[in-house]
View 1 (cartoon, rainbow, N blue to C red):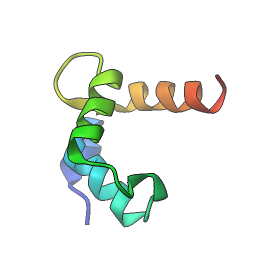
View 2 (tube, rainbow, N blue to C red):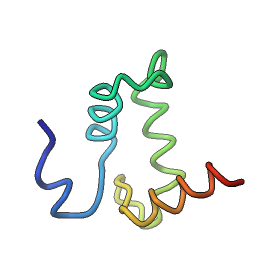
View 3 (cartoon, rainbow, N blue to C red):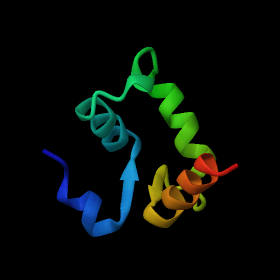
Amino acid sequence: MYSTSLFNAGKISVSELWSVFKALIFEAVAGTSSADLTNAVSKIDEDGDSAIELHCFADFHRRERNP
């Protein structure tokens, strides 16, 4: 279902993130555009390669859960 390159590279792209949200039926995705996800990724993406490294995603998730 998911690209093995996602796990090999330790990164997730906008399209992979969208697929994960859709697969999980993530309620926040309802009404969310690809542009919205691209903007969200760009805020988390530290090296500007349009993908989120696992450690960046984990840091973001921790910050959002415990502001």
